[in-house]
Image (tube, rainbow, N blue to C red; front, top):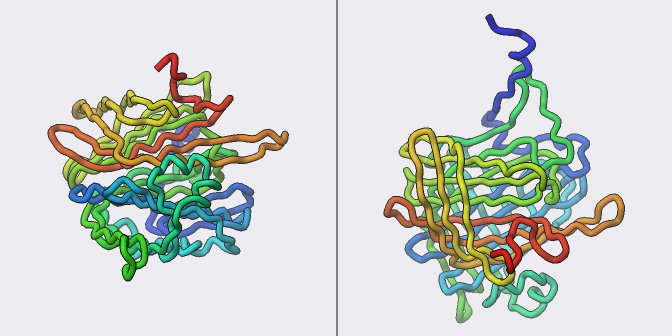
Length: 355
């Protein structure tokens, strides 16, 4: 016999087609509705990622465009364009359109990017934007889902929402995709313009709810795609220094996702505490996997916020296009490592003497 009290308190994950579109932001000052998509072409070893985060209750959107060129240069742009509503994912020249929920999306960008011969210069964004050329760029990419949807909004079985407070998001989902289209960096009628014909693979995700980038101590997020029927996403999240990190993710096998029950990411670091390579171990109910990763191109980004007591909070996010190897297959993806910076060093990275 089912206990009615325990049943209504059961947590379920809900995802509906309308969740592909924007939601009512409510009253949370730090409400964030975010869509992120990446795309990589294994043949040219190039690609990029694109993100819009609507913070309508703060009056702006976070807009990021990051393009990894085959020669190692990175084209990057970040902006906080003003927005007055949460009606669309369309700000700062970047527009993300849902053409068919859970199946097809389009990403278009018309704007500029800062082209960096040394992407590491973005650790000091003011100097990087001042000292490097800023050129026109266009993006026109079509996304087609090749997997089921993974994730949604956790809630109680009777429909009550969970209290996420000032967390990272109240809902989140992901999907691996096939991607086709064109990325252009530089005016095509000028010397040195790069035109990337993308016929590759990637991952998209969406989240909504209150978010502060400082809500987590550190995380390691590794989305990767080897083929349209073999892909992974690995996630390790440390919320507090006194608790062990949580692990999760999924492995796409054919047309199904196998849930990641446990995983480990052992990274190699340079003198700046940025990842250069990694070895990963993954366990699902079906089997174990060994994955190696080599960083091809890295750009360090940051988010800073002043807390209620006037203290400066500093978050570093290292965004690396990474080549992965597993089961004799080669794929591309990201190693995105977020760390809070305390006393000048990312908290999840061993100190140089300990590495």
